[in-house]
Image (cartoon, rainbow, N blue to C red; front, side):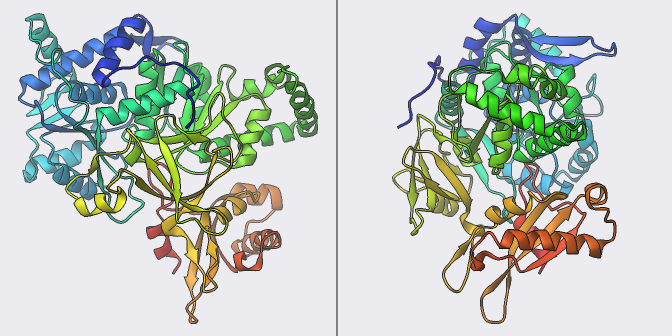
Length: 571
């Protein structure tokens, strides 16, 4: 079993975490916001943040929402975080909803989860009005995060806090003194929708805090760290690693203005750490590399990397100084990247490390609260997802001749089950507690885990050979001008599959690098590059047909390809 790198303070539940960390870090900034004055920021302290959680929670119980289910939907914002904690720390069960879903799916999840109140931002005013008029849900309280005052039967987040403050001033301790049962469902999360029907995952506070212990014992954040909140908060990866962990460690959080503004946000907020999907880091690296190449300094950087890597063998680290220009371009205070949600290109991981950035790859799923394994301050192996966390056991089921099998997980972060879906729960969790991840992996002699692909996406040829689409996509995505790709098996008349690829190209790069603008010329160029990849692989893995487009693939909010939908566009 993996040993923790750091000692961590234990707590019984999320409420206990807020109390203990609040006593330590109360005066430190918890959230930072831009003001109308350039370069001037407004801060909310950890103490003020926790006070508002208490005020809102007190009012929610006063409204009769004790032990009820309450949904939260909206863009990443301070109000989202206060609402989430006001629900789980003494009121009821929180149901975070995916902010990118169409109206009909939002309605479906609200009906399925049987929520009785919902917090939402202005973006969802129309769908909330429709639901209010239809009256087909259990919602009694529609709570706007943006309204200044209650208006037309819509409650105001701000006014609820003000009224909660009055209740607290009058010695209402129902929320503050509420006891938490860490073993029951307190969080209901819907899976990201890469399958046709999302399932409702039931998580307890024990699940979440167990994961927080594991994260804190392997990847260290310090109170001076500032996180950039970018991935959607409804997703467990951002919620646990990018929200609850920094709050427990006394860090501060700034909200990203959107993917186009990440670079500017990192610099203006002095971001030191962030979590995201690999696509973001890979895009960042391409941009950095292109900037160096335009200045004619790429060869010089390569030589510098060789020198610094040699010196590091003797404990001498000059990367920050040697590549100061690169750090200036990315963010001088940025020290830590954590990648999850998909496979990180090993070359990008190594390149960032060579340039003096710490970048770790992690792996998890909603059903495990979410992180199962990660590289960290002690255990790192390029291309792997690191080792299983200290509290977890992992094993491989049904290994093939190459040592690849389905990754199984057991431990305190494994979900309680799927809500109202006993059949799916039994399929996923064995009677002895082992959870089927659905991911195929191999584990090396030192315990490092290497994910090879999704079990259900594997293309099995007539000769019994397995094709992992993700493996081929990683190679195709390295072609200059390729933004992303989708590998699939086209059924043939003989019962076998022809391996094909749909390539999304970048029109600007195709024009800039190759002087190509016509679709047929672009297709021919990319097909020739794919054929070069074929020559590096055994014939059964050859990609035998190509489709090219400049339209983005269909993806979830965490940037996973919706393969069941994408396949309909190509067959």
